[in-house]
Amino acid sequence: MSEPKMSRDGHAAGSGLAARAAALDDADPLGAVRDRFALDDASVYLDGNSLGVLPTGVLPRLTDVVTREWGELRIRSWEESGWWTAPERIGDRIAPLVGAAPGQVVVGDSTSVNVFKALVAAVRMAPVERTEILVDAATFPTDGYIARSAARLTGRTLRAVPVDGMTAAAGDRTAVALVNHVDYRTGRLYDLPGITAALHGAGALAVWDLCHSAGALPVALDAGGVDLAVGCTYKYLNGGPGAPAYLYVRRELQPRFDSPLPGWNSHADPFGMAAGYVPAEGAARGRVGTPEILSLLALDAALDVWDGVEIGDVRDKSLGLTDFFLECVAALVPTGRVECVTPGAHAERGSQVSLRCAGAAEVMRELTARGVVGDFRRPDVLRFGFTPLYTRYADALRAARVLAGVLAVTGGTDGTGATGADAAAVTGPTGISEGTA
Image 1 (spheres, rainbow, N blue to C red):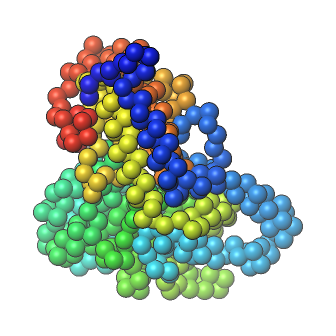
Image 2 (image 1 turned 90 degrees about the vertical axis):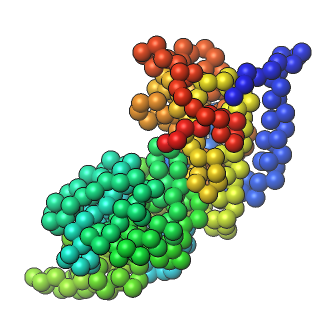
Image 3 (image 1 turned 60 degrees about the horizontal axis):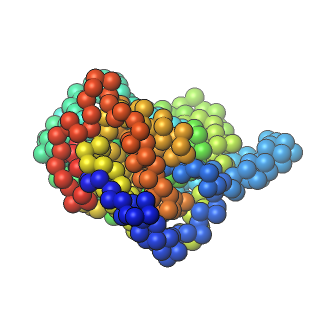
């Protein structure tokens, strides 16, 4: 990036970016969807890849759930208010967002619990001679912890390999691979159908973690032949803090899905109270215990924001926003102060931009104080998540401007005296230094 050139009136030569942002926002087919969220113009929120914004419909729905369904109907609400069937019903609402036909997604438990269920069930489906589980070497730590425990409990070995090497690593000993659709640090998007097909070619099953992709870009579970998948609902699906996760089990595999957590809610006759376990048919096999009704129904209300929204428009805007942000950063931030570790190629980019920056923790604290909320990943990565349903192009420009201002006044050191200019980097197609992470 180059130093911004100043015109006679003191404005940077990139001031035309404001007109571009306004034009792009005016033409945005998703522009009106922003009104479905509890937002104001006091700050720019670019952390929807960690926690989505509150949809305005959630509070009135929860008020009714608490005061009427729980407060008045009480136990009757399990039947009369549809509480008992909520995990499958809400799963069917999520299904189109992940490219799944109805009857294959159930909502409940946490992502970690669902990863455990999916991995152990996959191992149980595999032939006994397949003694190995593969896991993304750069995975979110919990996935790694769960995979290690699943391997230990099932008597398998665990091997961590980079996603780029996953298909080459899979062989006749591989039972299952756990893969992230989008890398949580870098925003790198991986080829779900291609990797799945290659794993199947090696005789292995594929379990995908969709936490950083569902709701931000098209996911084609059915078309891609995915076996099992898990995802959270509090990021791009805006379900709220601690919202329940979901589990996808491909229809053809459901009769063979042997859950390691066979709770009473997944019994074929849950109220029979039989001593022996007989699994339910279909997606209900993924249930365990009593559903988290308040958070489930908050999620149900949050999903109303997707009414009339085309996922293709979401992807187009995601790429447009991240392209525009990178362009603004290139125009406004001095050379050498940040290094982009998010791929420039659209086919390899999720819906976030990660910038390596010396003193990143200090920089993010200052950004937040100035009204631009992203997040920081150790040791030196600034993450900016772009949620297309409510983020504007004007927000992307404002974030880049504030970032440039912060870097102009901070030392840009990491505590050791090193600066962003000390990092080796190559110039990518956006004009921003792009790393190889």
